[in-house]
Image (cartoon, rainbow, N blue to C red; front, side, top):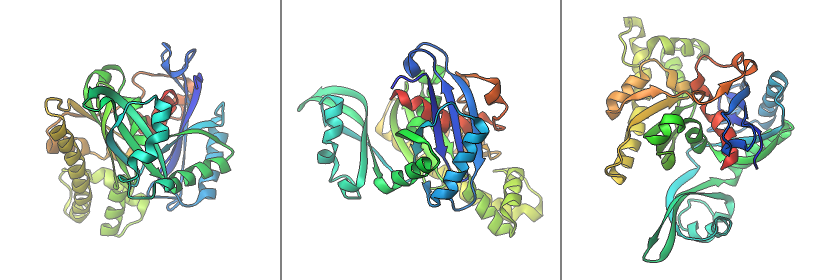
Length: 353
């Protein structure tokens, strides 16, 4: 599907975001520098999306219709993202077959590996290499398994809005496609996208995914903990969260709130650090060069330094627009930090997968 324009659609816990990317002749695999043509986002009320799954389809569909009215995207064809802790991603080596046959054979290879009946799962396989072993030619890759219900709820919301999902991509892979470009394509990079309720972590070695994990925590959990501790409303807690940050001195009256912020972020950072440690233990000699933070939750002041100290790695904010041109129409709608565009931009690139 070598389309020249693709819309990546991210249905998040607090907002829907879409990015239209122009690839030029040859599509995403062509030689032209891609252009972000349009971008827009529309907020969602609490509860419309729970645990990264659509729980109120009509509410989400209404937001999506509003999104298309505002941005005037040139197509209703979309690449849709999915990603929550119930989506399984694991390394799996399989006997070599042509890729269409290998994917068709997945139910027979993985039925003992899944915590769900294989008939209830949607399966995909992402090849990363091959070798000749004792059993002959073997494909190295990553198995992706998602509950059909997890995917169906998001697809139905998009279709109710009049959109046409062309494919469903894993958010972690979208993150890789957006960020493991340019100079990052030559490094071992840990990509950490902190959303509202989930954090996607994927480790890329020279542009090839090596390990992916979705954590059940994000920026909204920090806000909720602060709101509960200080007995304040969500919007006020969101503002105060940025004032408190992580690891900064605060006024005595904010000390309890700072402790609440610190407790949630400590748990999240420890889970991210453990992911890095697990990867390093299984890939000796291929250490991580840098960690890149994206997502709205990653903007919490002090979080990057905290992660750097805990992991002993350099940490920087990722910029998914670093290798793209940006049109004037898109620029007018960009959020305060371009790091929030990583997932929708990466979903658009997924059309080349």
